[in-house]
Length: 211
Ligand SMILES: O=C(O)c1ccccc1N[C@@H]1O[C@H](COP(=O)(O)O)[C@@H](O)[C@H]1O
Image (cartoon, rainbow, N blue to C red; front, side):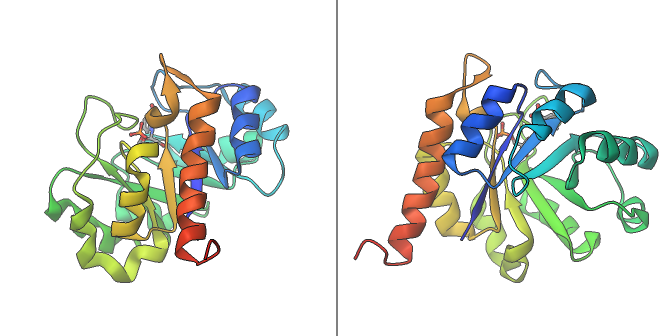
């Protein structure tokens, strides 16, 4: 069953919408972004969430001590590394991490092999920002990396209208949505609910639960 992460959470009520809709993970952006939250705010939101929802912090080129500090303050389960963190840097980390890889062309996926056996997030490299651009990449590129699919978090421009096709093509461990559940730049309760319902109803169909 593909899991769902809702990223770019800035308020307690947004986190509650995601939790109530059945999200498996939420993300807090600590990198430069219009979605940035302070560690203190994220800690307060994280504290309001059920323990079984994964809390993931998004960083761009943070040092190991910054990552460790955020882990401790917010009680994160993972750090998501969305910058130029090298395989060497990641290999030395003692913190659970998800390395994000930006995909513009198929050859960018070769980087997947370099980051060990942990979770890898594949995002579109198209757009002005490090992430959260709301743009997709060609999901067919992942067909050569089927053996890694249980480690893959698929991100980039996902929304209710395309998430089923994305899961069918890539069968990832998790899908990650941010812009696709926002209206006028803020998270939208109905859009979060509709996105997660779409993922879950597709999975029920696939498992034959409706037959
Ligand atoms: O959301 C941001 O502003 C952001 C900033 C810096 C790095 C990553 C960021 N978000 C991540 O981007 C992807 C895709 O988002 P979208 O659905 O296309 O809007 C997702 O993993 C977010 O965690």
